[in-house]
Image (tube, rainbow, N blue to C red; front, side, top):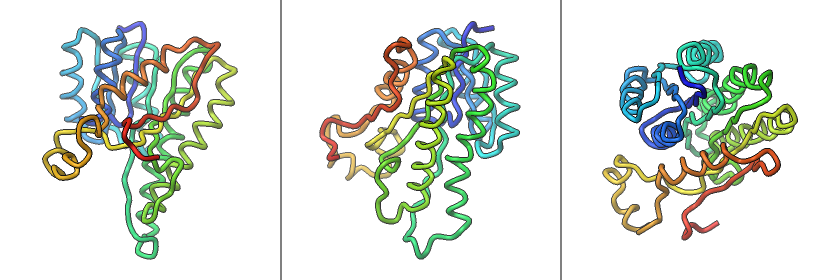
Length: 241
């Protein structure tokens, strides 16, 4: 059993996997949760090769009961959760007059509602211990609502507001809550295969490496209590902002 455990909700093959590797290299046990349970289990086996205990879980991020059960299982099998990252998201993009209530709700369930359920599950455990790190993954849309992003941006705005409220409530209790804005495009094999022209246009260092982003999360996790960061925004040096 690990002395410390990291729990990643939204442990996909990109940033989620990079976070898992980063935390494992720092010596934490790692619980990986995503909708596809088989993929979560496969990734957990990969991360276990780094020499830490791992657990893969199939979880619907917007189901607070399922998330609570997953967090409880992770603590029972791996040890106390000292690090938690809400990395789940659902991109909904559509002209506003074509946007359906179902699409709007999907964006909110996958981000704001999922963030609430996950935060409650981990903070119920962290707060009594007086320690822990909880991070929320934001996006450009967390602070800039572009055309056709009404659903996604409003949900990301809400997730940022949630994280700010939690930082102010639980910071004095010893829990570091942070919001990380990813203001750029994350590099991936899928992106390079499906959008080669855009990759070429962005050029060297124009895409964000998942490993570089994960290192920033681990930096936040290790900050001393006298100098905590609430919000960190990351972008390629050539990104226009």
